[in-house]
Amino acid sequence: MRPYVILNAAMTLDGKIATATGSSEISGEEDLRRVHELRRECDAIMVGINTVLADDPRLTVHRVDAAPGDNPVRVVVDSMARTPPHFRVLNDEAPTVIGVSESAPPERVAELRKRAEVVVAGTRRVDLHLLLERLHGMGIERLMLEGGSTLNYSMLTGGLVDEVRVCIAPMIVGGRDARTLVDGEGIDEMADAIRLELKRSYTLGEDLIVEYTVKG
Ligand SMILES: NC(=O)C1=CN([C@@H]2O[C@H](COP(=O)(O)OP(=O)(O)OC[C@H]3O[C@@H](n4cnc5c(N)ncnc54)[C@H](O)[C@@H]3O)[C@@H](O)[C@H]2O)C=CC1
Ligand SMILES: Nc1nc(O)c(N)c(N[C@@H]2O[C@H](COP(=O)(O)O)[C@@H](O)[C@H]2O)n1
Image 1 (cartoon, rainbow, N blue to C red):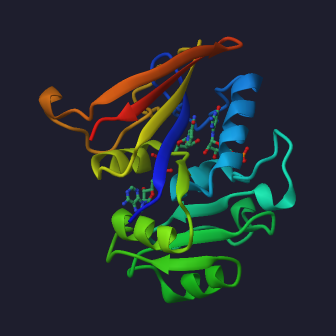
Image 2 (cartoon, rainbow, N blue to C red; image 1 turned 180 degrees about the vertical axis):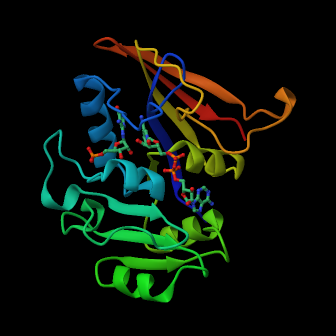
């Protein structure tokens, strides 16, 4: 058993979720409120380690009203236990789970255990199926996946995403080194593409929100 997973992200019209230098303020104010309402409805928010290192995110509900218990569990996918102990994802605003692999240096794992629950899943890279199973065992039924593009790829190709919600901002930045919504190794044949079904589309300020379910 695993949680129901909603992938949420904001991208420019040309599919970038950050510029090559890591600048990633894309959503308008209304979309940010939608994101935080969605966070409030979920039991956990999951990101990859590169997103933590690039953004030092809080991953809490802080743009809409929230009671203290409304913050979801924060989950970082971090094979080598590289999450810096002073980063905001490890503050006391919400509980945090760090998913590491068996290859993570024990001294870094021990340091993280002082501030977070550490789940060991996988030998070199985090085994996402196993991590999600463990999260479900902790009572997480609805999980919001907030990137980045490498983790999005692994989750989608692993068949671990149920819905995709994307904010398309009226911006274009280009750049072959800029992260897109989904990167990773990529799928070779269009015939093998992950198929989605459009459920809803609407505008929020200048942004276009598109919501899909992933076809099984
Ligand atoms: N506009 C938006 O909505 C968002 C933008 N971003 C941006 O995305 C960028 C970071 O994205 P990425 O570099 O792609 O990194 P990422 O955040 O997807 O982290 C990927 C890393 O996670 C680790 N990992 C461990 N096990 C893994 C597994 N099984 N599958 C995949 N990764 C695994 C690896 O170290 C891997 O390099 C940042 O610039 C950030 O600002 C991130 C989230 C949302
Ligand atoms: N939905 C969305 N729109 C954007 O424009 C973004 N840059 C992001 N980024 C994600 O949100 C995290 C920051 O969260 P906090 O405000 O610090 O709680 C960031 O790390 C990305 O995962 N998302």
